[in-house]
Image (cartoon, rainbow, N blue to C red; front, side):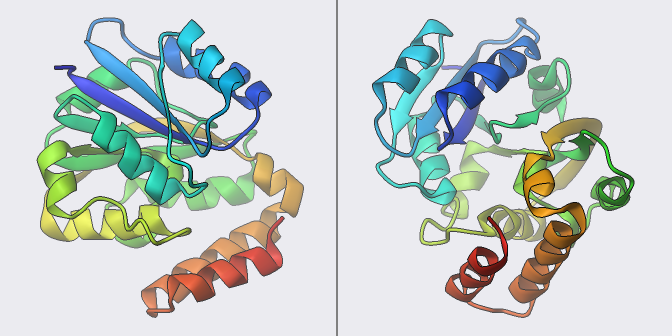
Length: 227
């Protein structure tokens, strides 16, 4: 049995994988018995080959939905602790050791953006506080196997906000910890859509979630305003 299972949902290009995967692998300590599982949306031989070349397990869920892909990856995992990570999020050095030493049943890292921007930095500052409203998938998520399945994992029917939802449920049911190290996430989507516009949309989405809007309505709003 592995000590830690890192699950990455994926629906990007081979170019994105070739750029970010080596960086993520370089951040491992090489001291723990870790497995990295990349879950593609659909079977793509070129992506599978790139994974095999790096010693990464490859699977595909036949659905382009992160919630489904991450649940699929958890079912493939062999360890008692999972770490869910976006492909364009770069964890801190020796992140596997930090996760395994972390107390509690679940948690995440603080957030930073690359390239930095004063407006995004202001929002990232609040990720140091254990507030469910300040959570997001870009911070990564570690959780013990038993706790994950006790909550039935991610809501597979959800196509957006699934990361905030499971963080809220974990915070209510266990000891959720915010680790002091920062996970650096790409701000490429902000550059494509505009920093102020995209952050405003994300704020509205979060408010809609807390007000109890259906996931379908939240997704419809997102698609209307974001590329």
